Amino acid sequence: ILWLHALAGSGKSTIALTVADWWDKDELLGASYFCARDGQRSNINCIFRTIAYQLALRFPVFRNHLTKILETDPNLYSSTPTRQLEKLIVAPLKAVRADAKSDTPFPAHVAVVIDALDECTDNDAVSTILKSLALYIGQLAPLKFLITSRPEENITRGFLLQSLDENTHRFALNKLPEDLTKRDIFLFLRSRLAAIRNDFDLGATWPAPERIENLVGLSEHLFIFAALAARYIEDQAERDPDGRLRRLLDAGNAAAAKRGTSTSAFPILDALYIQVLNTAAKRLGDALKAQLKLVLGMIVLAEQRLSPATLDALLDLPTGTVRRVLPALGAILTIPDREDNATPIGIIHLSFPNFLVDPVRCTDRGFLVRPRIHHSHIAFQCLIVMK
Image 1: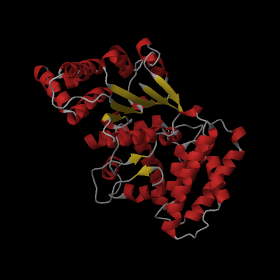
Image 2: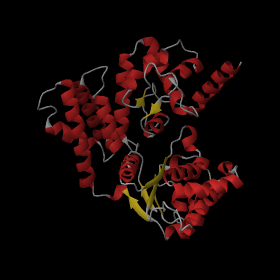
Image 3: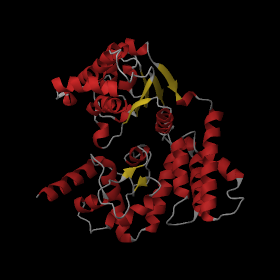
């Protein structure tokens, strides 16, 4: 196992996606599971059965043995993670190793990616997934696991289990040399800003090198800051990348100047979120501005991601209200096409809802979401719909 860990916004998921794509092209990837806090991807019971399913799709010899196991116990998919690992992955692998007659042998090295394990719902003191792996780590060859997460307490404890401790390489992204992280963020921003320059015909010298360096310095070595900054600058509705870059730098520099007085761990990222929200509010009329906080609260607190039409209905808003509010928030949300009434609204990064519900970080009370109040409102609206 390779455990890649770091704080939110450090680029763990980007790395996981990239290496999964590389391994897929090299025919080394066996399976991947990208956890998320919304919907089924937060369910720990889905991880091992999804991995088994993908292994069966890729490798006929594994599929043949898995099929035989499922024929004898078709309800394994609903069993505990530990039993799923034993019966859906370990047992077929054991049968594969014993099957010397197969025309399509199982590869000698197969990579499995589990990204953002900390975003799965798991209240155990020690990660359920890691406890399961610890029981069978010696029987999982030739699978090699890449697991990414934040260093949450229950995950850290899991990797201290003796069998995992002896079979895990740890890689802390925050221990990379700062100049290397800074270089990568610079290359990313230079590339994205060059694309924006070409899209908006801004001239060969835009932006000035010192402005790129300023933006890199404000990133605080967080790739999520660079990614969100680029999305904010290239907003297609306002079509003013130079003005947006200037306002972003002004807000970031002001936050950096107050760093010593802020109790937030991410003052400049917080300033970026406030800048995005303020810009959005200025573009909305009074009626829509009054709905902005209500819509944001529903998006970040709802148990599952909802479509714009569903949000309109649940909040008892006129049809199309949410779609009129959301385009101003394209830097932090993914918004389905107008013709798409089924796809839910997505949040670019978990750091945004964390920011929005934290009064230490979200210092503008016009945007702060108070979970107790908003959950009560959500429950009330659900009761109205059910009535």
